[in-house]
Length: 371
Image (cartoon, rainbow, N blue to C red; front, side, top):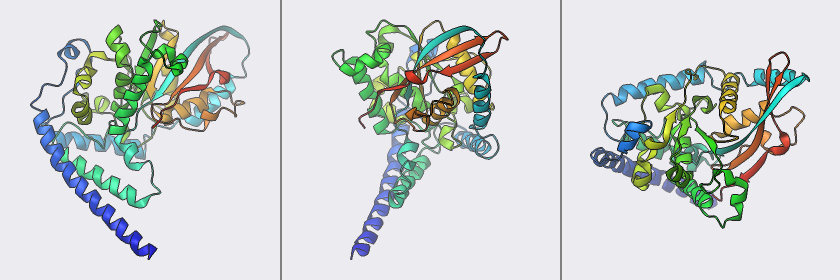
C-alpha cells in the first residue's frame, strides 16, 4: 500500500513539475516581452558604472548561448577552474619554512557567500530523486522560455527568490543599529564610518547579493563595488560561466527586475570593473595570489568580498597553516549569505619573496543566515 501511494505521489509531483514548467515558459516569455519595453536600467549607471542590460528579446541570442555552451564544455573538459590547488598547498607549505621575515602587514577580510541561486535551488539536494526531477524539469522549461532573450537561468545562474530574500534579510540586519549581531559585522554597516574596499566575483548572483545586502550603505556613501575576475567560482559547471566575462555584456536577472525593480535599476551605478588582465584561463592558485596582491594594494584595512563557497574552501585550505587542522571552515562550506571574517597576513622576506597566510585564530563566522 505504501509503495502504491508512493508511486502516485511521485507521478503527481512529476506532472506538477511539467505544469509548473509550462507556466514558467508562458509567464517568462510574456514578462520578458513586457519588460523589454520598460525602462529598468538607471541612466546614472550608464555614465558612472558598468552598463547592464535590461531583460528582453535579443538578436543572436541562440549564437550567444552556443558560445556560452562552448566555454562551459572547455571549463569542464580541459580548462577546469580548480586546477592548481595542490600546487598552491605545496607552495605555501614550503614558504612557511622561511623565517627571515622583514615586513608584515595585515588585512581583515569579510567574506560573504552569495545568496541561493537558481542552480543551488535545483541541484543542491540530489538524493531526493523525485524532487530533483521536478526542479530540473522546471529549470529546463524556464530556460526554453528565455531562449530568445538576453537572460538565462542556466549560465551565470542568478539568485532564486529565496536568494533575494536572504540578501534582503542580511541588509535588514546591517540596517538595524539595535541588533546586537551587528557588532561582529560593524565594518559592513553604513553607520560604522569605517572605510573598506568592496569586491565581488564576476558572476551575477554574487553581484546581486552584495548590492542588495549593502544597499543602505552604498546609497549613503556612493561607494563602488569592484568586479574582480579572480574571485570567479572554481566549480566547472555551466552556472559558473560568467556572462560579462564571456560576452562582454550581462542582463539584470529578470526575477530581480520583477520583484525589486527600484533596487535592480541601481545595480549599474555601483558596479565597477577592476583593472588587470583576463584571468579565466589561469589556474586557481594563480588567481588567488593575484587577489591577495590586489587586497594589499588597497589603502583600506578592511576588505568586504562577496563570492563563492568552493573558492573560499580552497582558499582556506591553501592559506591556512597546514598545522591548523582544527579550523572548522577549512573543510566545511559556509551557507548562503553566511559571512566569514579572517585576517590575511602578508609577509615579506629578505630574499624579496612574499608569503600570505591566514591567522587561524582570526577565523570566525560572524553572520549566519536563518534560511
